[in-house]
Amino acid sequence: MIVLWVIFWLLMVCVALQEALRNPSIRWWEPVLWEGSSALVATAWMAIAIKARKRHAMYLGRPLAWFGRHLAWLPLVILSFIAAIYAMRYGIYAALDRTYQHDSWRFVLAYETVKITLFAGLWLGLLFGMDSHEQWRTQRLHLLQTRKALAEAQLSQLRGQLRPHFLFNALNTVSALMHADVARADHLVATLGDLLRSSLRPPASETIPLEEELRTLKLYAEVMRERFRDRVTIDWQIDESLHDMPVPALLLQPLLENAFRHGVERTAAAVHIQVHARCRDEALEIVVHNSGSTLDPACRDGTGCHNCRKRLDILYGGKASLQLHDEGDGVAARVTLPLGARQS
Amino acid sequence: MIRILIADDEAPAREKLERWLAAQTGMTVVGAVADGMSAAESIERLRPDAAFLDIRMPVLSGLEVAAQLEPSTAPSIVFVTAFDEHALKAFELNAVDYLLKPYDQPRFERTVQRLRERLPLPQSGAAAVAAGRSQTPDCKRLLVPDRERLQLIDTASIEWLEADGNYVHVHTATRSYLLRRSLQDLLAQLGEQRFVRIHRSTAASLDCIESLSPLFKGDYEVHLRNGRTLRLSRRYRDAVFARMGG
Image (cartoon, rainbow over all chains, first blue to last red; front, side, top):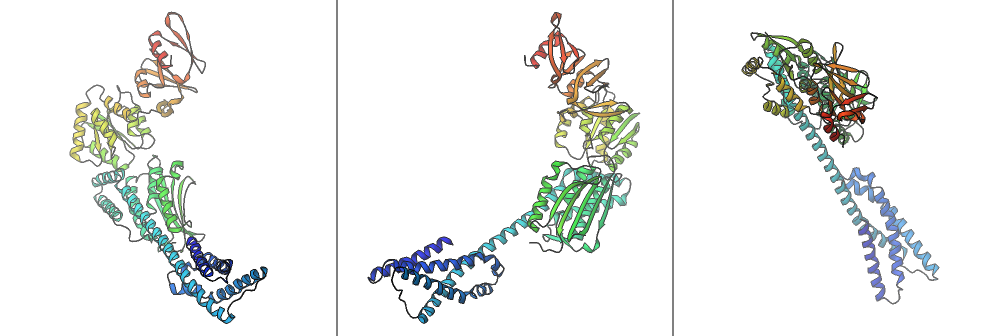
């Protein structure tokens, strides 16, 4: 843009110079002064337009509004332009003991108005084109990032469910239950089926209602509770008014998986798991807490957490967070989402 | 009667084995535990003829439990696992039996059949111990008896070992433990990089040896950093010199 601007004004100076060379009554510096003064003032106004582009970015989708908002300034631009350049020219001519001669003021006003309107139209058009392109590119990038993060989350969930230790141990639990309690074994097979189905089905959108996310989470919890039924208890405390709150799809299961992997599978002691969802300080807070373990520092920044955080960042741009820390007699994973805020 | 121990951290898995083993004639389940430490303790205390060990268990894995056993007295071991690619290869190489979860009745019967055939043979558990050790080559923890219980100690804390009949005294800076093991087998388990045999009945940690001083007839005195002096017999002299870098 700057390069174009410089070339444009150099061309203007060159054209004026060429005319001056043919006309012996004009000194060489005169056209340079004329065009130079115009360039100076025009540059000042252009700089203001570029500075203010962020404020107008939201109108890029409606070109008429965008141009209207810029062109509203045109009368002021024309008047200040004429005042400034003629003041400069008079001043410099006077300093060189000459008089600046020009056409009548009425003609000057008409001539400059047409000229400036044309130039403004040209350069605003360029600015509009560049800004629209930039905005389109950012939006597309964001959309791609969002889709990629969701696809990664889905893949990691699927991988989790197909992880041999989960799948084969779950099947072995069914096989064990079958001989003791057919109805329960039957129910476990159905739960496992529902869980696998939900993992195979791509999420309809980036965010889903909390209730729906919890439904999948409960399927996973049920399979795990059956496997470790003699030493794991799970307690759900969900604020029912939050059921329709949008949350990122597939966000919570990795957290519960961690609670089992690091909290349950590493000890033979009884473990109590709590899942809370509540509204706190204008934010939706979801906590997965397991008793009886301390936080493994390697896990605080593990890939699972890293992916979750990256996704929250893409979706909420720094307004959401995921924290892991020792809390009470165990470890808590705490997700905080901006309440009601639309994703950026 | 074949006495069997079961170790698995998932209750349904234990129950399945208990039910199926109880249905076998001539077999009885003497214990069912949920983690590796309890498994090792129960093997020590109950001396079962055979053990079904889950590989993935809290604190001590099934493989680590096997690795800590004395091969000559270890029970026959059947590893039970959902998935463990590397271990399965080792089992096949050592002809150790294993059950892949989930398994059905015919597969389970085959395992029981093999167990019945193997049990009368001497050292029927040795292969499983070898497989366990090959899968946990970096032995950083040693299971030692501490009164009625077992406990894990850091192998880096061991200063020297002293054979005493069928037992070995394991000396650390703070205290000693008595293990029913042969010195040779214990050294094999601990790995010979860190320990050097200095006498028919003694071995010392290389890190703990401060200096050597010659005695008559080619024997030496070994001075440990803790102030203790041990005897280096000439039979082991060359090996020790080589290990200590000349």
